[in-house]
Image (cartoon, rainbow, N blue to C red; front, side, top):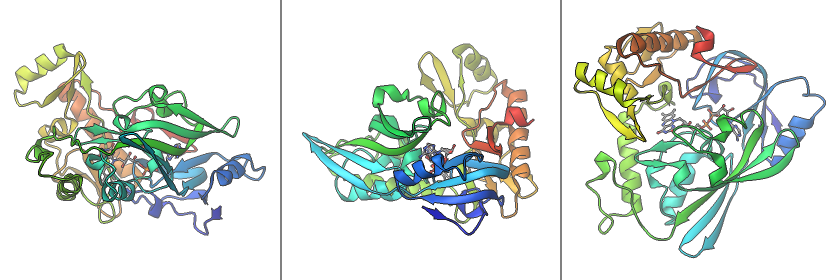
Length: 344
Ligand SMILES: Cc1cc2nc3c(=O)[nH]c(=O)nc-3n(C[C@H](O)[C@H](O)[C@H](O)COP(=O)(O)OP(=O)(O)OC[C@H]3O[C@@H](n4cnc5c(N)ncnc54)[C@H](O)[C@@H]3O)c2cc1C
């Protein structure tokens, strides 16, 4: 393990919020994690595992130890027409996806360029361009923080949902994901249901073509956190009843919606844009000028600026559509996780 000489969290969260932790430690092995969690020296401190901090907002100084996950390694096993790939949780997700594409391990290409560590991917069941982590996840290995032993959950036990899993529910704060086991294919079967990908086909296009297209769309659409602090989609797309949708549709005929079981999933970005909030700014925090679902730090935004902006959006959206937006980004205040509802 490596105890960092700095306490500054700014380089470790994609919003580039300038807050401190009591201590920052890099864990490079499972044993490091066990040592940190069992150490007498750190026993009184709260410990927070962090990947790349690209789904995290520090709402003040973190009163505890931030443990950066740097567990590395990949193992590939052939299973008939599939590959089972065991990836250590500290591997960088975007680099891992590119590595799979370069090795002809098919089925992951739509999830290109999602910032973060592999170990964070099952937590909110990351998704993009018609594919979710759950579609390729075989099982998840974790360190049980109560017993400090390694355990494994099979796909069906992970209770994946839309931006959700058991790791955000019953197992929240109880585990550290140490590896993710993915099932990828030897057979090229692209997933092209998402609009801009429908121009491609399985015979004349390769996985690399899809990968490059997804990278191109994402680079044009989303601000690069290295240049403009952000955490991707700030809010989840809300799920509302059909009755609620029909009422809104009368008032807003353009309202985009997708079937979601017996309900409808509504595009949160449209709700925010239609509320006239694109570009809306509080101090140095603003709604991105092109992507209403992305809140950005224009340089010197504080967490209070981001929170005030998020709360303003939530209030406005509720007033207009009676929809309660839920944030996808995880908030930490003091030594605990918190939420907009708790803070305002
Ligand atoms: C520009 C941009 C685009 C994005 N696009 C998408 C997208 O298309 N789809 C999508 O789903 N998301 C997207 N996101 C969100 C983000 O990339 C994902 O949520 C990603 O999985 C976060 O990974 P991370 O390692 O940075 O997580 P972190 O922010 O470091 O951690 C997130 C949470 O998981 C916990 N955690 C981290 N590692 C572990 C572990 N090993 N064990 C247990 N708990 C852990 C942390 O304590 C925290 O609560 C985007 C973000 C950005 C900045």
